[in-house]
Length: 161
Image (tube, rainbow, N blue to C red):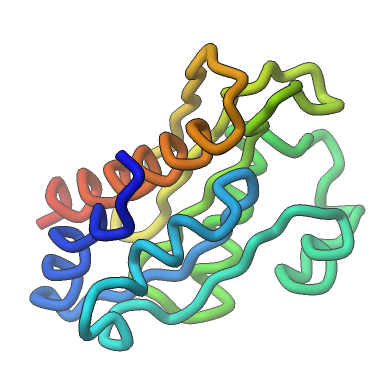
């Protein structure tokens, strides 16, 4: 689904509960944040986010030094969890949501194929999942990753409440 309105239900739910979210995304390229921000009243729940696509972005925007990455590689579940926890903590949000992967058309330098992403939610509960689309279509994967991230957050918010 290539539609920024995919977060309307989630935005309304967060707003109704007085909960907030902070986003760290990579291979979705900002679509997660854009979707959340497309909902009127987003300032009630969206505290901020960033596209953490490079080492300098990780170090300077998230403030995660190289030493903290010992034994953790990008595009992995532990890294997604670290990013979600860090962004949530930095912005004081109820929820942290992170996405990291390889949108395509080729895989990443860590050996993951195109269509690989790891998603993490932190907050009143934590969940981490890996998604493999098996597709090398960059834009299609970006939309699938964004949708999956929003669905994971919605499921956590619903399960918590």
